[in-house]
Image (tube, rainbow, N blue to C red; front, side):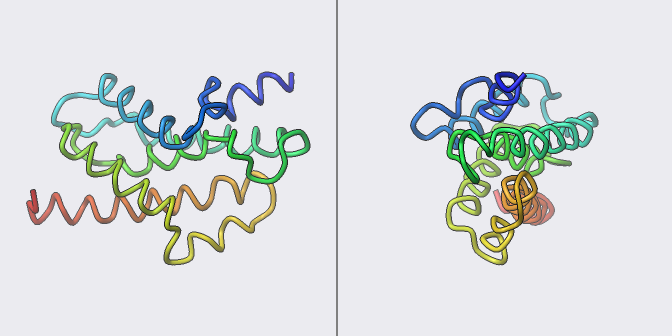
Length: 150
């Protein structure tokens, strides 16, 4: 059963690659684009985001004894954060690319309380910082879209 947790936590093995977090977020963007409706936000994305987040919290707890705290192999958190970044955003390539760049910025730089959330125990800490990075990205995307900044 632990192999299933590792498979989910590593987002089907992407976490084993160098730059796995960025690759997982990019694969998520590509997958969501092809599953979404061109120009409209996906009504099913909030449900997907919740499922990915809950799975991520649980699986991160399960793999922590084997991989250590917040292992770089765990990239399901990047997938959850990317999903949150794209909530209620029209599925246009320019917006998806912008959300990806913003999410990776917030996830890597970790400003505005993001870094503190990493200290939470187990799966909560693994997921929370990426979810907050996704929220920040999404808020900026909403401003970009409302004010038609590009």
